[in-house]
Length: 83
Image (cartoon, rainbow, N blue to C red; front, top):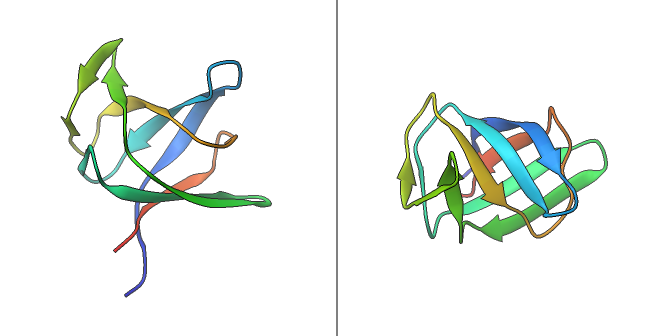
């Protein structure tokens, strides 16, 4: 089954390795995601999400979340749910 696009990176803070992601579909802790764009393409589990510095377990479409990433990302990178 193909991965489904669930959002895109709008900002990335390299010192703390956190991406701001605008969601087009729900996301929750434990979900497996893939970040792809340019030469980047990596997969990881969602272990920490925040909205305005508050830890959350689940986010809905239309929300902007901060997500700790294992690797670098850039604005415009696509975020996919690994099915």
